[in-house]
Image 1 (tube, each protein chain N blue to C red):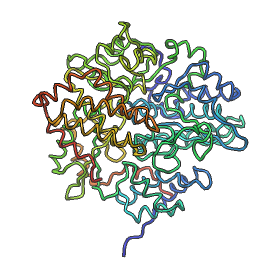
Image 2: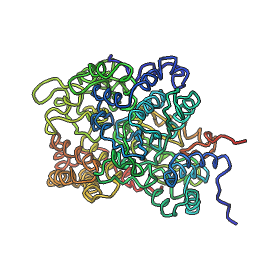
Image 3: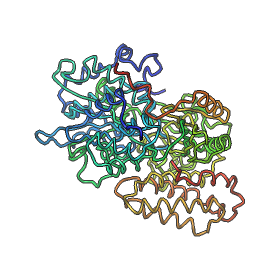
Image 4: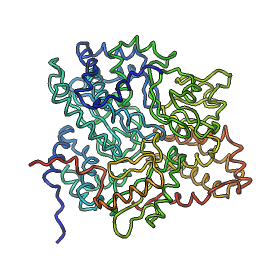
Amino acid sequence: MGKQLLLENINVPGIETLEVYRAHGGYSALEKALKKKPEELVEEVKKSGLRGRGGAGFPTGMKWSFIAKPEGVPRHLVCNADESEPGTFKDRFLMEKKPHILIEGMIISSFALGANVSYIYIRGELLYVYHILEKAIAEAYAAGLLGKNILGTGYDLDLYVHPGGGAYICGEETALIESLEGKRGNPRIKPPFPAVQGVWARPTVVNNVETIAATVPIVNMGGEEYAKIGVGKSTGTKLISACGHINKPGVYEIDLGLPVEEFLYSENYCGGIRNGKKLKAVVAGGSSVPILPADLFLKTAKGEARLMSYESLADGGFATGTMLGSGGFIVMDETTSVVKNLWNFTRFYHHESCGQCSPCREGTGWMERILHRILDGHGKQTDVDLLFDIQSKIDGKTICPLGDAAAWPVASAIRHFRKEFEEYIKNPSSIKDVKHYYSLRNQQAAV
Amino acid sequence: MAKEIKFSDDTMAVVNSILKRYPEGKQKSAVIPLLHLAQMEFDGWLDVPVMDYVASLMKILPIEVYEVASFYSMFNLKPVGKCLIEVCRTGPCWLLGAEDIVRHIEKKLNIKDGETTPDGMFTLKTVECLAACGTAPVIQVGEKYHENMTCESVDAMLNDYRSKGERKTHWDKQHIKSQH
């Protein structure tokens, strides 16, 4: 097992309370951090090599250093707890079990950024976790860890939780900001970037839950020590939420650079494919990243063993590689239909498109309907190329990355499993359980 | 005469504490949490007069509330049953049998996705990824997640809710503390 920097003590009874969290060393990083200058903390995070854990992998220290500091304008840190990427459930797990690590990280990060009011934007479906966080925040206020003059240092911080209303798009940072302002989650055109004009036109940094929590071990051990974990530019540990056809689904903390084969088959992690089946494909970093067939997943096109790192998973570009993404690790065994799975994902993106950009609003619907037609037994041989053409006209042509996220699964499924599509079209009787599609088809539910 | 639309004193205390979380003049930010509270207080859905009331609390136009309520999937613009059964239908849950769960509930309650049972007890709704893929298939009722569901455990869950007969909402009433 790798180092357990975030999940350490996660099963200790009462770790969700301030008392037990502190008894296990909690808030020691905060005490250290508040003795430093904010710039020193930004440097420490830069040295750690920490990259955004929500999916994009952008260097956190660099993101922090972009924040504008106009005289007299408040700045804000907003935690992105809108965890909605299919396959991803690491942040929910961490917040539910160990809410104080997020609060400690929020105070450290807010201090580094010079923010005096910060928010945790949590998806509305997780209202039960909202109440867990509220309780933990109340404990922190009572102990002088939040509010005025924190630990006697003269630093003030108010921390609030804000629930969403059910919209995948609000995980995109500018949509999240719009939503926090009480509007529809329509992403903004950048620039201006949130670091200059974010929530209420004030300089804002938006960071993922895991990213913020990671500042706690970084302060505790020092950025340089943290950077020694991992491989190359993939430093530190990463939470991976593993699901699908595996023996041991769950949230695992790995040292970046762990071989994917070990992660998938070791008893310490996923424990192999369930029911003795063979591996067919993996979506390694949340539903948006390219799907890879078993052989290309385990080994790169060059024949090297693939590692759980930003670089190794991306090796070969989109032709033969994928992305680490959010760490939503979805495993499919040999019985899975890649075409049906793609229909499901595409329906998801169609449902979640905010509707601002026509390539995404219309294109996701076209792709869903074409896939439905194929599964309905009425596909045409030209449909495969048509699907590929549509995705290419969404990719990179929208305000936010939801368009790309909808395009990549289609492109990669066709790239690696073209024969499966052609077989369905040629031989509709090979499609089993078509009737299922009618029960789930009318998705414009009355509620 | 129609019932007056007004939050209870206890809920109003929560509303006021939420309104204070945002800078002066930016109280519109509270619209989503207030709509959750409104669904909790007013039968699980948002009738137009309810949304108008919420708008008045933030001193914003009713349209600013309607456009938000109609964008986010958790807000119900039509009446729903006491228990809204939300079944995750996305990728990982689907890989592990969410379709079977949906069809089982449809058969058991004799309703389709989006419909409500004639007794007003249950509404079935399929929803997108609930961030619980490791314990798929997943169903949400109110604030509670029901995980690793099977047809048998669905039956037990439905019986349990039916016997209790309580309304369940995403913002659960148990979190509203009495002010007295």
